[in-house]
Length: 460
Image (cartoon, rainbow, N blue to C red):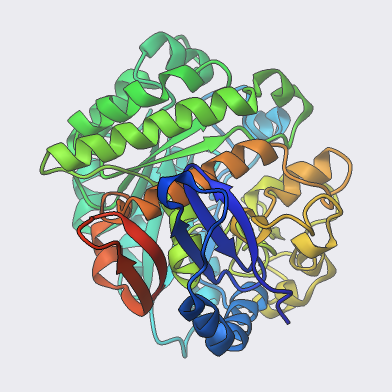
């Protein structure tokens, strides 16, 4: 059961939040008075809905419905990114799936989901899937009526005809790009050979020409953090609809050297968000920062969030899992290289066996209420204290996030923009069309456009 609402001041607004079920309210503090009047109808609504919200949210957090499976068709990569979570020996000496192995896996997944009401999502992921482009494209062609497909690539091997194929088959595509400054990007994403992926990635982005299924993936380090706002401008001009800006993960010790300071990270990330909003307001093309959008959804529509890293337990081994090139089933790709997290081989064991395995259960059991630093935090079920893999590699997954202070600043800024009624510039167009008000308690001051109190709940 919920322990009740807590109150704090947030950039001129006053926020009430029940951290357990994410009921929230924003009350405008007129003239910045020390005493804040909380209208009684907010408390009345809270008492009416809190138990139902608690049940819905618990079902969402602890349910085990699979929504996606990541397949790594090869261990190998044609780049040498210093922050890659896959150990270098695996990337250099690993194996690749054969066509028969890949088709066997897809057939097994299709059989597991044979009674599902919707197509399941298959995402071809790390290391660099286009090293086995031929078998991937054959698989997409053969199974396009069975699955929805996605693909994450550094674009070094992508050709214009490949882009047309992926668009024709409605494949979601993620292209890695860390900066609009070639020298910064290529330092972070170098090829095995000379240079980096900047020119190829940019050319590929242009080939997709505003394709709705395109995402650009940016890993934030201390080397590119200050260039985040300029990257948003650059991608907006290329008609990119979404960019994911993810802080570097600490699944390997060498990544410590690349960590940006939390305050600096929050400063430039917020500038990037503001840049995206301004550009979306002033032009016909909208660009969003996907992980910030997810933070907003975690507040206004918790059950509609897409990214499952910032929820506790996370989606690993619950909503998705990864199949490695050797056939291992692991809760998430971030666990590659970590011992004790295999749920068995897809070639020998069933998907159900993997889902019931100790390895998967270990990740599903990790909840913020069990973390000493997090259990009293009001933002714990918006942040989720990611990532269990990186925290396990640092000693124990039962500790607060490496970027705790950053996440707090971003979530508080999300509340600020919600209070300013800027949601329509932050969400995807398709998300706005599929969300409706479940509750909406909103009254305005006489003769003013300022919202005095807001409580909204959007339902998928």
